[in-house]
Length: 268
Image (cartoon, rainbow, N blue to C red; front, side):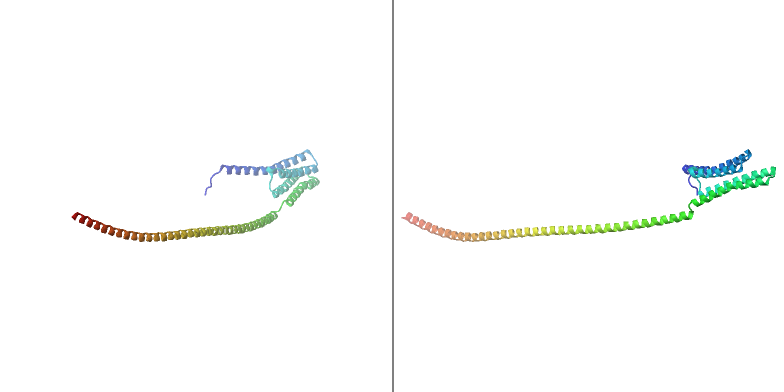
């Protein structure tokens, strides 16, 4: 499977490689320059004590520069190994020059003296290596501290989650209680309003029924009066009709008598 090319990743890789080579450069510079300076001091005839001091100073200066410069910084165990290797290389360089002199002069005492003083650079490198390794934190200790910190963070997280759950439960219970109280108050108020409405509707209905009953009673009374008046009117009309019949009969009799009278008068 081919991954897509990213210019930023390529630049980051090149930048990382550049810093890796830059961090390795001080060791090479210290080894070459230190070895050349030691040979130069021997050629100039300086005492071995000064030469050994110069070698130790170069080793200490390499450690200080690499430890202080962020761009040159490497792992602590690698820094300790490099200090040891520098001391060992300086010792070998000093011994190589001593053996070279021994081939020309054959003086064994000078070789032994140079060898004893040359071991000072190796001792300095070993001392720095031990100090650096003792000062740096162990990987297992770091892992154990990280595990303990992670466990403490998990415990704190669990405590916070438990507190949040308890707070949420308390909030839910409070909301339920407040909601139940509000519902109860609303139900009571609604019941009271309904009861008042029912009472008002009952009173209004009762008053309306009373008015209707009164109207019906008044209508019944008026109807009774009308019936009585109608009956009296009918009786009066009957009497009047009887009187009219009697008057009609009397008028007819009178008319007949008048006609008879008139007929008799004519006959005479």
